[in-house]
Image (cartoon, rainbow, N blue to C red):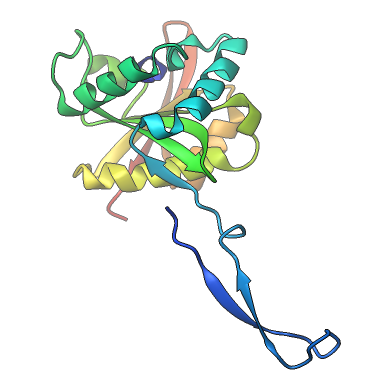
Length: 205
């Protein structure tokens, strides 16, 4: 299942730079290609184009025993399931339709985010509308904030007015990310032995 348990070309930019007087050709215009400077970070639908990078990410998850992100040997099946879940067809019992995106930066798989189109009883108690995971080697670089920010834009496209996002009471990093994205703490409670925080984010603001 494509990340469900954790409940998925930039154009070249050119600029003109006036060269300083102490360069070899003072007073000239230098053309600088800054495509390598400007981030190509974006959310995309799961695709075989980034299969190898995605597999590498999954292996990193497996090393920390985070097995619900997917099987490196079954990427094709993962992609098919993500499409089926988005349509809401043949869903396993207890699941709701969900859109999965991958965060890609400079052609590298960074992480996965799932946006559930609606909530059921289980999701109201754990998981909420949005769940994401950043591959271990890319953590503590600001990607968590970016993936949630981009996911909120996608959630709005699904005509959601507000979304529920939950995190563990001990996960300070996630709390900061949610709050930075205008998450408002609604409640704290223990669910199945986990101390959780429940945030709502208003997409109309």
